[in-house]
Structures are given as C-alpha cells and as structure tokens.
Length: 248
Image 1: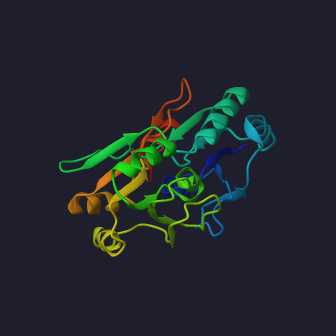
Image 2: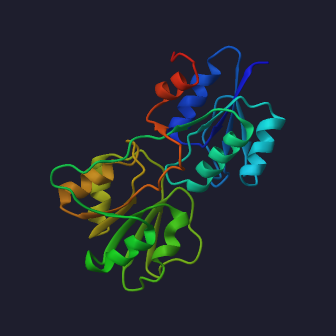
Image 3: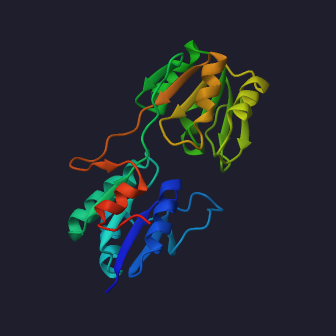
C-alpha cells in the first residue's frame, strides 16, 4: 500500500509540502482545509474541506483512509487543530510532524510590545494610539469590539463578523505585500499603532518594516505553546527528512 500523508492546513508551507510529497512516486497526499476561506488556492494531491469532529473524528478518518503520517502545517495560532492532531496521532500510533515557520524577531529601532492574547492587546491599545492597523485576522476582531473610542483599520482575506468595533474600516486583501505598499497604507490611514500575531514568514512581514521606518509601536501577540511532547520543524526540507523522504 502506498504511503498516505495527511497534511493539515492551507498555509504557504502546507502547499509547498503537498507539492513536494506529490512529486514522490508511491506517496499519496491529502490536504485538509478548515473551509474558512471561500476561495483557497490550488493544492497538489487530494483535498478535503471541513473539520473532523475533534481528535476522535480525526483518528477515525486516519484509520478509515489508511493514513501513515500526519503533518500539521496549519497556522501557528491554530491551537485546537494542533492539539487534536497530536491526540489523533497518539491514538492511532502514526508519526506526527509539526511544520511551523520561524517567528518574527525584533530588530534595531523596533518598538514591539509582546502580549499573550488579543484580549491583552486590546487592553494595551488605549495607551499607544487612537488609530489602529489590525492584522490579526477577522476571527479575532471581537476582542477589540469594546474599544469604542478607537478607530480600527482591519485587513483580512474574508469579511469579519460581529461583534466588531463601531469605528472600523475593512480592507479585503491577501499578501504578500511590499514595504512601499505597507508604508503608503499606514500613512493614508494615519495609523498610530499596529497589532499583529507572530505569524512569521515573509508574506506579511513588510508591515513590520514599514512600522519601524515610521517609528510606530507594534503590539505582537505571542504564539500559543505546542502540546506537551510535540516539537516543530521550521521548513519543508526538515519535514520531508522526518518523513524519510528526500527533498527534490
């Protein structure tokens, strides 16, 4: 029976990994997407959409489809999926590889404020500025709904849903973005402070450079910890190595 690898997530790394796996003869790859984005990009191999019904549901799917390895390449903040993947892999006795791009690191001139959650970010904002560029995604906007005196510019791929701050401008866009584009956006909307998650990668990192050049403070939400006993690899070649497959 050919190897069957289940790749969780539609991140850039997940797409690169799916393509690398599909290039190997005898390896079957299925990518699993949560379905929160209405128009996901193309993926190599087979694609399934929607949740599994928790760790037990994922374990049942793994058994039913003869999966031999799971790679969790979801967003660094998809905490519940990572926990379910760890539990399902343990229950079925198959290997789990967690693929996470490295987080961002502050450089000279950065004015970063690290916080543990979006709620903590909201608590900090009134002391940092009145006009906020919010790039934490549409699903977290509720944490800022109580800040009625601040104006938010939210950028996301899909429109947000209530509850939302009353003073909100929504920009629908998908990265990557350039430093000149981000600088122009910050100036156009008269932004005082940037809020972001520590997603890592290059697709949306230009906003950090733009904020540094304009001397703006940045509130950075830390990544949630990995489940006990789980470690992560930083790139696709490292993930392939753990799967005992050569990079091509």
